Image (cartoon, rainbow, N blue to C red; front, side, top):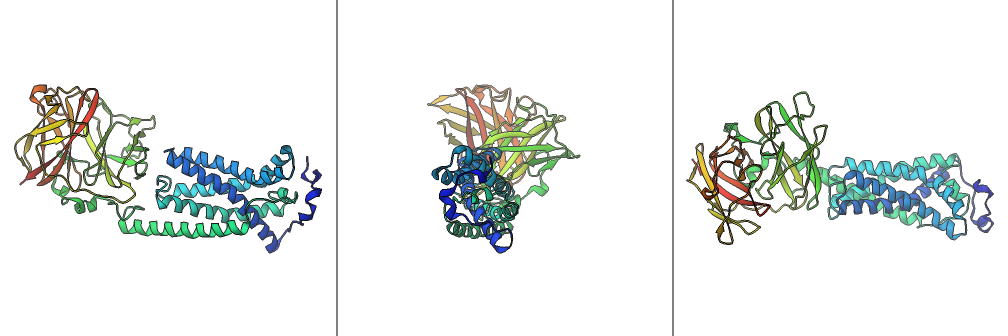
Length: 473
């Protein structure tokens, strides 16, 4: 049914001839785009906010935002027509003809910008970057959609379908235009500030409060000493080694929200490696620690057929982190490291002093025994676990009695650790008797302080005890 066949006699006094060229046509296109933008923006902002708050993936968040943008966009056009008495069967074709291409153009533009702006999709609702990028994206979407609507109107399509009814509703274009101008200024200011901060900090878009790279590690404890390290003792100070390279799919994560962390290990030809040996019951161990040696996590990602490893990770504190991929390939133990940033105000902590006994967050008391650590010499460490005043017999964890990670203060070098007895596999104890404690041998390559992370299993749960160890010359 043609729109001109409907009875709009009650609205003929409001019907004006549609301009076909010049500034008048541009003015109508601007007005039509502002009208469309209102519903589109409501849906886009709502979808982005919900998806971000609930921790959806980028694809899920965008899909929700696009769906709501079309829903609210069509609704804003349809409601005035329905209130005027037009039948739903008449209103639906008008709304589809008026808004479909316009909304589609806006959604393609603003979601593309959200994906392109570094950290925008990962930023939380409390992060100015999220709102700044979204405001800027909607403003750009408006600018690029005006010529689309002008082209449609000139050919008697698009918003012409609504114009022919003589029925117009929704907020004032002048008000929407004022809000849009403010949003454009706000968004542009935020993105310029982010870009300037990223250049100053050297990590491509983080905040002043975050530490970006290994080059700045000395500001958070210790000097860089990797130049003279024995590579058999120290690992994880580089993204590549033995012809392999660690590539993170993202270098920023939102604060306090579970997100997917994905990465690949690439060969010399740039293709993803897929043949890994099982080491400690897993093909891949992923270690994460903040630059001040807090926030330790030991995760076990899963590999897809294309060689992409993925795992859910939640980093509660802002700051610069180091990610270690620890694995065995072609019979060689390797640990590759890369940097990761969580935007926000980072409150870095001083490393606790050396001690012989610590309490875990789960209520276990763990003591460590061993001679004073001397740089360049092997040092034996024995850990004893007590719970409720009684010695604990630990359960097997990753095929052994325990797992130990040692990181050097400053550059977070990943140290080679191996059990006192059993195989030379690094990072776990095997073959030790429970009553004798969990024992490891490690070599501290340089003077300075190190953080030890002992993981053991008891009562079906994995517990972590953290120690500071000082090595002298």
